[in-house]
Image 1 (cartoon, one colour):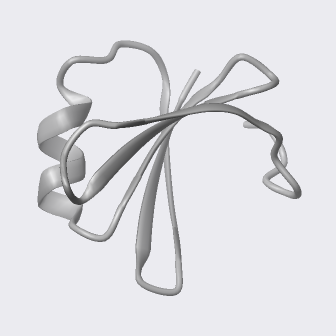
Image 2 (tube, helix red, strand yellow):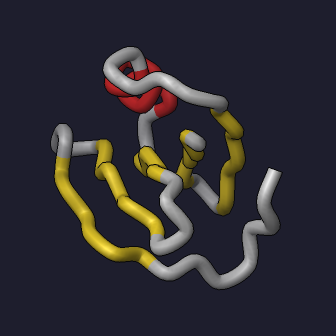
Length: 64
C-alpha cells in the first residue's frame, strides 16, 4: 500500500450527489464521499486492489 500524504489530484468527476471519483497522479483512483453506502454501491463498477480510509466524516476508497 502506498503512503497517504499529500496526493496530487489529476481530475475529479462527480458520480452521485454524495460521491466523487478522483484520479490521482500516481495512477490510483479514489472514490470519496460522505455516505459509505453510496461509496460502496459505486465501487462495484471498479476492479483492482482496494484500500479504505476515513478522515473526519469523509470515507475514501483507493483502487490500485
